[in-house]
Figure 1: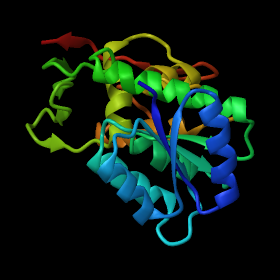
Figure 2: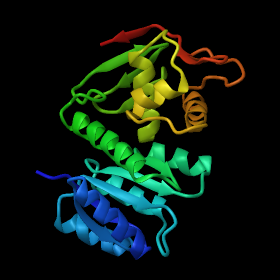
Figure 3: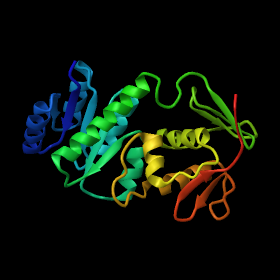
Length: 238
């Protein structure tokens, strides 16, 4: 069965070019030019991956990415952005979406699409972050990977974004190991890092704050200068 790709872009010529190329690479392709069109396709057909332009007229790409993620968590999302702004990259990662900066080569797009599809297939098959009940304890915190819940030492629940969950799950399953930015992106999101990609640094900062880990003198997620990060507490898998 062919993977079904939905291209959402208000530039009809772009939709035509991408459709022709992707159909030639063996994909089934549908197109939409706004949020209403995107929702109509997703409502009536099974979609494997949404290619979503960030700068749409009307509803913007990030708003539509949230709608896809909330309503169809099994669908891969690849945001196409010409902004190059770190904030958009971070928001995309937190929603469980990937991004590709414009301009891009069609073969680069194809490689990124296949990476996202592999990750979604692995997650559906149970080969990604564990979906079966699996809990970890560290420094008094309890982290339920199956239920996607984090509980403080005082018993309070802490809400994590999808990106923060993936990042913490990566640290918990790779404790006391120095992980560089590129490897964190590959392990947490199974995606290749873009040049000069520092969105992971901001995500680490946000995760530290939720863990109450002082960014000036962190004790849980430590920075290894010139190398990356290391999760230092003893992790007990329950």
